[in-house]
Amino acid sequence: MLVLTRKSEQSVIIGRNIEVKILAVHGDQVSLGFSAPDEVSIYRKEVYTAIQQQNKQATQHGSAAIQTLSNAISGLFPIKRQETTKEKGVMPEKKTAVR
Image (cartoon, rainbow, N blue to C red):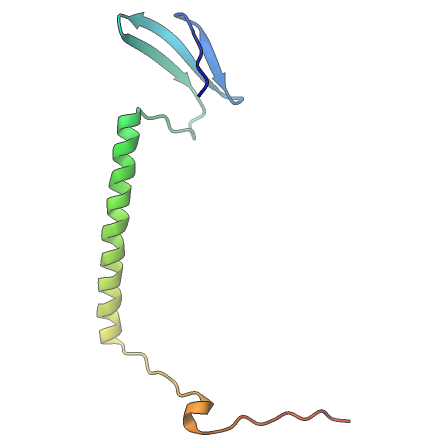
């Protein structure tokens, strides 16, 4: 972890296009300003952690729902399994080289 000391109105640059600026310090609270491209998401850690947990739960529920739907559909439209030539007792033809 990189540790830096900054004063109010000083900045840190991350990469080429993200700036974190110290706006104010009030006791034990620090106000930060972020300048970043629109495609860069910025979250407080507790919010990010909550989003990740919700996404994990959604995928778990989604997988169960997909399996339930798959089972329901397969019951409506059973797939006929085709016998292989080996199961039918038919031996495949041997190919011979033409000389």
